[in-house]
Length: 115
Image (cartoon, rainbow, N blue to C red):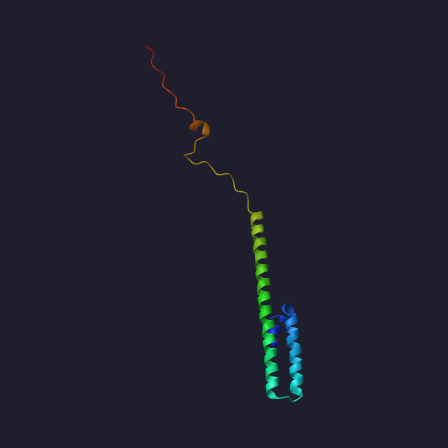
């Protein structure tokens, strides 16, 4: 039961932990009535199993919650980086670049000598 509480089962698996606590109270009553040892042991095992189930549920839900929080934090950080980033200047033309008007212009012909 203590391990389930440490795993925050009271927050993430309250119903299952409540069931385990009720089972524990029943086991303590059976033990106080000096019932046979086997019935007390069986009931105690059931309490342990239910408490373990609550712990597992709590660990899974906590991990899922943490993953969702990390995704949200990463998304927010990416948005902040994008907002802070300066716009990129236009690319500078390379040495091989020629304006379109020069590249498509026909070559000039040499005038023919008049005879």
